[in-house]
Image 1 (tube, rainbow, N blue to C red):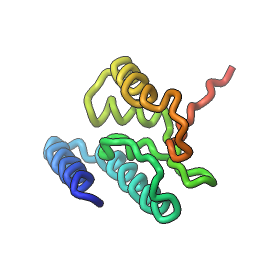
Image 2 (cartoon, rainbow, N blue to C red):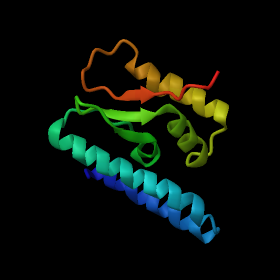
Image 3 (cartoon, rainbow, N blue to C red):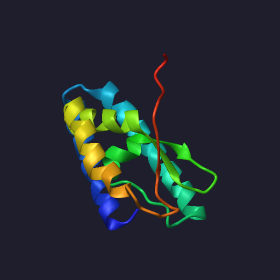
Image 4 (cartoon, rainbow, N blue to C red):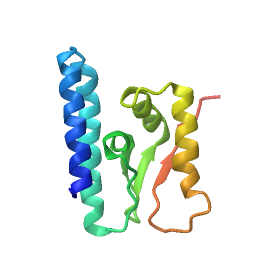
Length: 126
């Protein structure tokens, strides 16, 4: 981890400690596991594609990582990203969707970078 990532991780651990003091262990165990899985995927991808774009802040967006593709790009779940913004950052679902669409997806609109992340959306059953 670089210095910024280490600060994010330390902030995440501090947030987790405070939540545990409030007996919110189960929720944070879930988010902690998702965060650590995301770090594992990022580290694995970085070995093959060090230019792969990773969303920041990692303490939130790592929780949305569901894997990587054959071109070594990070794959994020839109639904998990929104859940992370709601549960970790305390946003309402509507604010989380607006924030993510404008500040994250909007960044990649029109970007012609082969290393940009992939966003997966669940299909609703008709």
